[in-house]
Length: 341
Image (tube, rainbow, N blue to C red; front, side, top):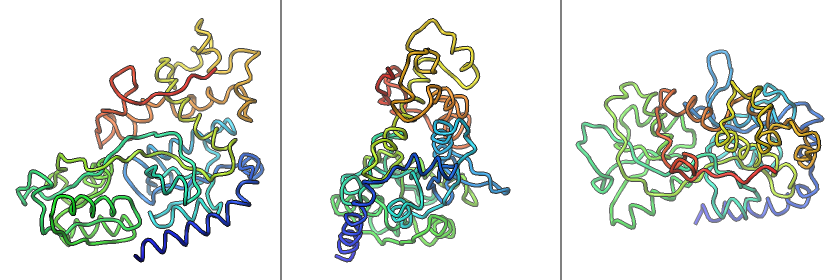
């Protein structure tokens, strides 16, 4: 009941906030201050994490850089606000951040009651379980009575309850607000099981004191379409953030990479020339409120979707996550972008 009350209060606050948000022009605000303020994870390997010098890197971080490149032609014009699962939504609602790129699941509640807009799904994920190999557990259906580490304020917490109830299993939730607290508790043996998005489990496993002592179970118990979110009431900014993702996908489909993007501006393919802003009569940039070379600037800065994926979480990274359903639709996956024309 407490969670329902909190959700209702937050939703009411957003409804009040919505009147002013509808009048917002985020692009003008971003251009005036000279940078994109991006809400990211406080530290998740492969997705968003700072190094010892405070430089941020990761899959979601590259999306922040890509938006900055589209707006300014300069991927460095972005600042990062690390947020916990609980802090991320107020940060976006209040205007503290311009876009939330924080492995956040698109749900009906977040799309409506919380006042956000999602469109681009940059990673199709699902919730899983990680256990110590010493437990000799091969399936999540063997976890009855287990203590389960989980982060509060997430769909993960709700899915966990639904899964155990649906399968008539008992469990003891060990709940923390910050992901660092969940990681430390699991590593210290305070719980038997760690549950979150499967991509997160592969990332977190690498940070444990003995990674090889742990395994991710085969069950995926939910749909977790992850992607950037913006506030409702500003269609222009919503379009920019969405089409940055679609540009990354289209570039991969065209075979346009960070290395060959200059050469590809001379392609005989009219779709590629239009995409990279090489057609003089094209209006795809101004229609977004950007310059015609916005997509060129995105690819020049971070590469195409495949490059972003492989560098941060794929085979060229420590996580070595398979593309799976995140492959292009032409390669057996479900990543598909509308045409840029």
